[in-house]
Image (tube, rainbow, N blue to C red; front, side, top):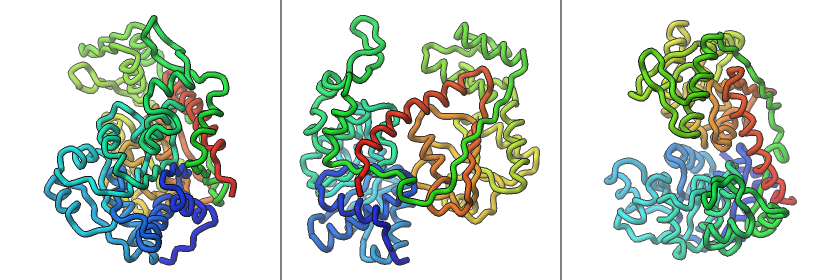
Length: 452
C-alpha cells in the first residue's frame, strides 16, 4: 500500500529524525508505528545515522502490529526485521539473525541485557508505550538504564504519558535524556516540583505539585517532546459515553456495605478479608461486578445485576457486534456462562484468528481484557459499541481499550462506550478517579502540543 502521510505525520517523523532524543506523545489512531518506521527508514538508509535498531513493545504489539505495519506499506518493503519473542532458543535465534530492526517484548528487556549473553550493540532504541517504563524501581527500567549510555538515539512513544499523574514522567525522561531535564534522582525531582500530601510522620503516602510546578515541568521537557491529539488532525467519529446503572437488592447491598465497613466478611462459610485499602478496593470492585474471590481463591457469587444489564445491552444492539471489556477472571467465567445460556456466539479476542473473526464481523460479541488487548490492536472494523462490564483504575488501559474502536478507520459515525455502574458502590469512584487523572494528562498534552 502506498503511504501518503498527513501533514502531522510528516511533522512527527521529521521530529524523530532531527532529535536524537525524542518523546512522541501521539493520541491513539494517529499512526505512531508507521510514523516511526518512516523515520527509521530514513535514518537507516538515507542518513546512515542508525545501524542496528531495537524496538521494545508490549507482547502483542511487538509480535503482530509492527511486523504488520512493515508489510503493509510499500516504502518499508526493504526493511528487514526479526521478532525476538518465544522460547529462549527462539529469541536467541531471532537476535542473531541479519536484520535492520529487532522487535522484543518489554518483559524480556532484562533478559536481553543481563542474561542473553548477546552484546548490547543497538545504537537506536524505540520504546513503544513509554509509560510502561514509568517505575524507576522496575527491573526493566534499571536494566535499560544500565546500557543507556551506549544508545545514540532513543525514541519514546505513547498516547498516555501521565496516566497516574506527573510523577510518572521522572522515570520516562530519566531513560530518554539520562536525567538532563528532570534530574538524575527521584529525590531531586520530588523536591523540585512536589511536596508531601498525605503522610504519617516521615512516611509519605502521596505528593502534590508545588505552585507553578506543572508549567515548569512542561517547559523543561518541551524541546524534546511533541504531542498531538487525534481530534485535532483527523475526522473522528463522535464518541458517546453512556452510563448504565444497576441497583443491588437490599440483601445484596447489605453484603457489600458489610465488607466495606468491617473489611472482613463471611459469605457462605467462606471468609473474605481485605487487609488494606488496595485489597479492599479490589474486593469492592469484584463485588460490584457480582462475585468475589474468597481467601481460598474460590468464587463467591453475590448478584447477577451486571449480567442482566449486559444481556439487555447486547439485545438492544439488534444484532450489531458488541465488544465487552472485563477485568476479573470470574467476570469472564460468568459472562461466558450467560452468553452460552443465551446461545450467543462469542470469542475471547486473544489470538490473531479471533481478532480477524471480529474484524470480519463474524462475532456478535467479542470479549477483551484491557491489560492484554489495550495496546495496538485494530478492532474498529468489527463494530462501534464497547461495554465496560467492570472498570479498571488504570487510565492508560481505559483509554487504550476505548481506542480500539474510537480511532481512524472507524466507519460508523458514532462510537458508543457503555459503562455498567452498580449504584452505591465503588464503581462511581473509579469513574471519577479516571476523570481526575485525565485532567492532568490532558494538561500535559496541551502544553507540549506541536504548533504545526
